[in-house]
Every structure is written in C-alpha cells, then in structure tokens.
Image 1 (cartoon, rainbow, N blue to C red):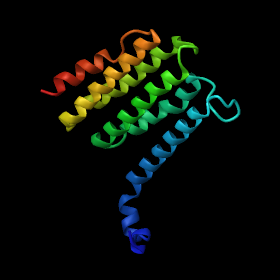
Image 2 (spheres, one colour; image 1 turned 135 degrees about the vertical axis):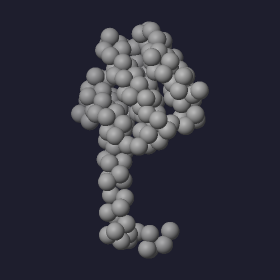
Image 3 (cartoon, rainbow, N blue to C red; image 1 turned 90 degrees about the vertical axis):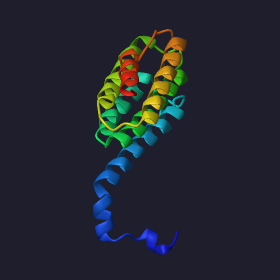
Image 4 (tube, rainbow, N blue to C red; image 1 turned 120 degrees about the horizontal axis):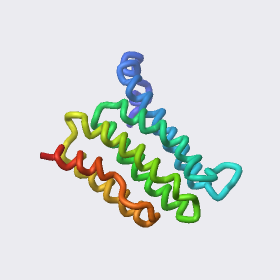
Length: 159
C-alpha cells in the first residue's frame, strides 16, 4: 500500500461514503456486541443475558437487510452464525424460554432476504447450512426445530 491509498480524493470518499459508512457502522455494532459477549462473565462490562444481547443484535438485522442482496446475505450469515454461538455461550443455564422468539425473528429476516431476486446458488446453499446449524444448536438447547419456513423458501429458490 502506498501513501496515496491513505488519502482518497473528496470525490472518491463521496462516491463510496453512503454504503461504506453504513457497512462500517454495522461492523462496529457487531464488534461491540461480540466484545461484550466475550466479557459476559464480567458484570460491569459484559452482557448479563442473551435477552440483553438480543436487544443490541436485533436492530443489526434491519440494517443488514438494507444493503444490496449480496451484502445482506453476507451480513445475515454473520449475524445468524454469531447468534448461534451466543446461544451456546450462554448455555442451558440461562432461561431458554426466550430463545424461540429470537429464532423466529431471525427467520422472518431470512424470509425477507430469500424473497429477493439475484441471490446466487452458493448463497442459498450457505443459508441452508446456517439453518441446519441453527437446528443443531436449538436441539442442543432443547427448544425444537427452527428455520423450517426459511429452509422451505431457500430450497425452491435454488431451482
């Protein structure tokens, strides 16, 4: 990288500003959530519950869906995969009764994304894999199957 890479022109900054700014904002939010999750055992700086984490994560889905489909897919894969890990991280010792509504909200977001034209077959397969992972995590938590509608929506979309 050379020095000119560090100093973009005003026109270059303006051209990439709206999308890049939104992406940077979402990346920062997800990084903060991840950091607070890792510090969950520290009552002064970490999350106390999955419900508290969800309050911060939920708005990230709407922001992720506001991008063009390929970016939305990447962010939703990230958000969903991290949510699955957060569920396992908080474990069965926390109240699992509140988790199924969280999975339903994720599924609603996925259904919105899967309705969009222009998703690649690879992205659809990746979404199916993340849904299967979610089913595994939900089974481990003892809350039953999740993402059933999203899986049905993704399969016909591949044909």
